[in-house]
Length: 183
Image (cartoon, rainbow, N blue to C red; front, side):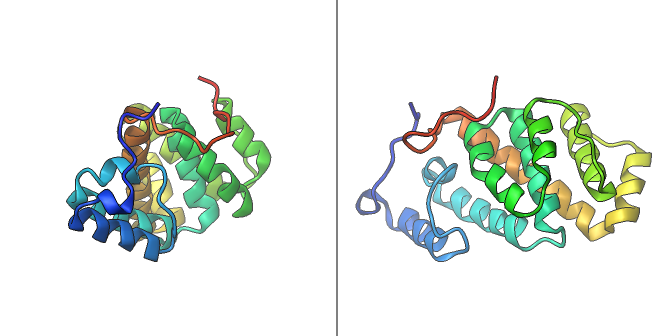
């Protein structure tokens, strides 16, 4: 059961309604996941949803790699809604189903693409150790380029915020959906 009341648009303050309308007008075209809790603070919701739109839709990383980073983050936090929302996007973006299944099982996937192995290693290491060593950083900078490494860190940070919000507020999956991740 969610810890935040789902507001209807008629119940929202003008500031909440402005952010709500902005989210619906953007590339997501729907309100779900962390947005209802964030709307309790319209200023945070506005800034977070703008950052989210950038890291989800406009980074220099191809969707296959950004979705891989998102799934690693969702699994790290056991964020059911985040995994539920992004697993099909990752598969559609070209991420191999075996990679997705391994991450779901908390196993290191077998990669055939070097960039996927790098993103997995970078994301997993940063989540587990709260930093990356010089060798991993240099590998990422060389393979992806400096702007993409900055954006990768942004993706991991933003989706950590999403996961934390989903978990703290116990945001439910859509009716009829079962949690996709084992604890």
